[in-house]
Length: 442
Ligand SMILES: C[S@@+](CC[C@H](N)C(=O)[O-])C[C@H]1O[C@@H](n2cnc3c(N)ncnc32)[C@H](O)[C@@H]1O
Image (cartoon, rainbow, N blue to C red):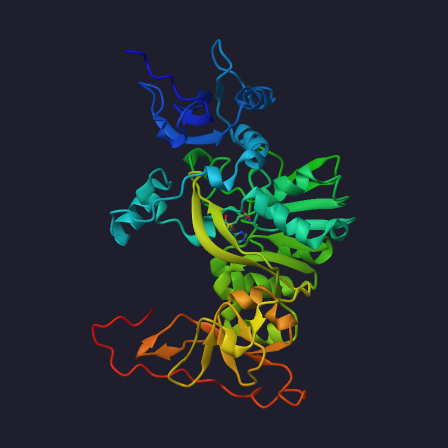
């Protein structure tokens, strides 16, 4: 019987085993279990078309690749090598080629927490589920989408500061570094927080690098300056709110751009607002509904760009879903065309307080307050003749809460005059009558 042809080489596989980094041509990506007798710590399969050799050459030619033995495929591991490799391959990785984390592990929350704490690293699918949203990284392509949205002229002559970013691994840093000349940037600066658990360049995978290592990196198109220099110990964490980082934000930066920890979004945004610099940062989609943002929306001090970013990279190079938007204090002017006569809106309902709730389209001929989901805000409804009245409102229907909405109203009333009648009203949610065993949320 004829042998079935072996499947095509479709991956270059970078693996960490026995304290060395190894690089192979391979098939099947994450199905790769490593070589017999060697303990595989982690792998990063890089999907390739016909360019496996090209990618291998790029990595073998890095000055940091210190070949071990006769062949070129093994190198001594080092933090610098991981950074150097990552800078080259991150732009080649596409979201669609990565597998999704398994979020349905079998462990209890406590077991998972303890396991993660004691091992201090994530190396299987059950662990993945315990990754905090703070520890998910931005994809390179998403940075490009943001940069393009602001337009090439926006970046010219600017000092761009990334204050939650390791220059060795952050897609923001790598993108601005690679496109420095094209964007005509003046300088890029990043500060790496030493509490970061997600660290492609080391600490996640090996405790030997897990010491105090917040640092600053500055690049002006010619020279890269690292403070403190490689090998010297850092002496403080370099949180975005540390005095030294705030001083960079206040005195050196023109634009502050990053994906900050979601859990600190309010603190981050307020700290950066105090600098009066341009802020561009990721945040949870639900941040539209945070109460403290009300004045900012109403005074056009916060805006969102018209894109949704749904995938982030995890510590073991998989993708994890999280609905996020990019928020900025640079006023955005995009408008939406998702406006229709009320009678033509297919999906709508009135809740137990009589509040109209619509999601995909908003009504052009309804002059009372109504509730919407976050998407219309991202799509520019607040630039399209509507104003925000209340950030958060949970409609109740059939004695069950629906998911949280935001209340808006048309800026002009039926007579074409400013619609101020509802400005100072607090819209109370209906009360759930009986909290038995039944489901509270839909
Ligand atoms: C959502 S991740 C994004 C990382 C990176 N900016 C990116 O876009 O890929 C947020 C990072 O901020 C780090 N972080 C947490 N607290 C911080 C702080 N106070 N200052 C700076 N960074 C912090 C987290 O450890 C995490 O690595």
